[in-house]
Length: 290
Image (cartoon, rainbow, N blue to C red; front, side):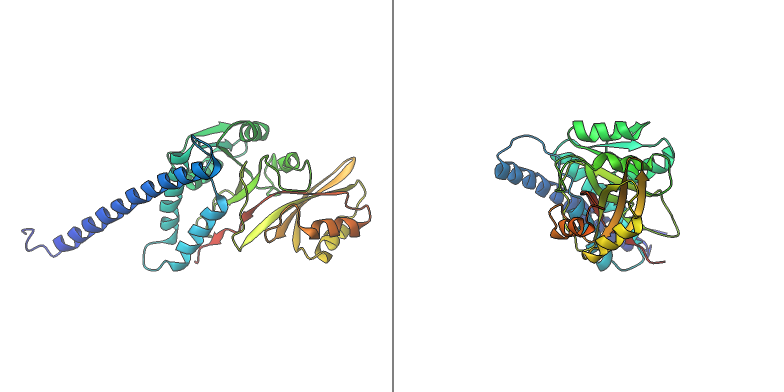
């Protein structure tokens, strides 16, 4: 059959045209990323590369695309394409490396990290949670991938290392994302969190990690009721009790360190809650239908 008589030929030609148009738009997108980097440099008065990760903005992009999507192409594929584009954007603007804790499940954490942060992003495997947090704290442009607190894996009590300083948001490492963002019951992946030295952003569908410090014999139920009475809906995720009790809560909504509900809860507790820290949070993952 000649190409002229082949009914598939015009369809394949159309696909080639679409591919060229997509490629042109990807290149245009990259040019705009460069422009954004230049504008940021002028606004901040700094020259040179910057750590361009913005977890809240990224989640908002993926949610918007998932909601507007239709047709036979799976949303998971759309998410994977844009995660690669987002990761490339970060690498174009400055240093970007992923430190992955894999002692309990090397393959699982590696896969979820590569899926979220891109196949071309430099990665390093770490034997200990401490090493991951050290790299995030001391090196520029490093994001860490760690076990989700309370998930039952070994090493999940690392969150206590973030609960220091004042109740306000800090410049140090904090939890900034939950991985994977697109979730499917048909293809479960390792549950993890991302830790980085970047600001959180409100997306409209968020959750916040709170750490409560209290006396060793404090009632966990009482503390949770006090938090809820202050107007914060939260779940107890994990706790440690030695010389003092330390409770980790997963709270609904975006909560900053200076939220007046936190100080109100501490005062209402009458000594049962001595200190409350915000150690980060995450945009609520998007659950794929089916």
